[in-house]
Length: 267
Image (cartoon, rainbow, N blue to C red; front, side, top):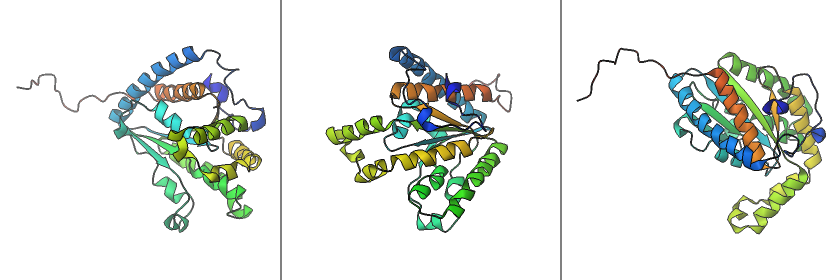
């Protein structure tokens, strides 16, 4: 199922033709949630092994339109893992210090170290998304960034980082419903921002730049997954399957003790 959402390098996609709903991939929410809960338990075990093994690094990139579900994905999928081994970073507007360096400077220093999982809630891709729509930098600048991103991600993979990139694909109708929930439900008022409505008016422009990023930055070493995300239960299942499948392939093991401890007994 998850491989259905993994893009193939060189195969151009049109976002308008890709599903935002689960219907084609899964029909039974109750069954999906049962599998998801099992995968979440397995994920916690693999994360412990990854941390103890101390050799692999896993970077997870989450991108989506506003209300696409990045925060919810992190809460749901990583519930139960040891927070010592997972670090979440969000990328807001760059600071003056960030702007004094190349656009990848603030990103590179936050990539995960050995034994850890790093989660980017938004990422370096903002520098070929927002900057294009808002015309923050000229085309000569953002055009070069696609290949710079590809080479940056290649550097990470060649030095031991496994990269999983997920675009949470929601429909414009689903975004409208989620924005309305933020207005109607008092406990969600804090999530609402008028800036979100301004971005919504630029929906088509954002679809164009997301599509460009997905097509130009899907590589053999760091492919994108386009996850149907209108239904949160399916989104969670698809991402958990990809994570657990990747960790199974890495197969980190608990290390053996460096000295023989079989004869030791604690008084």
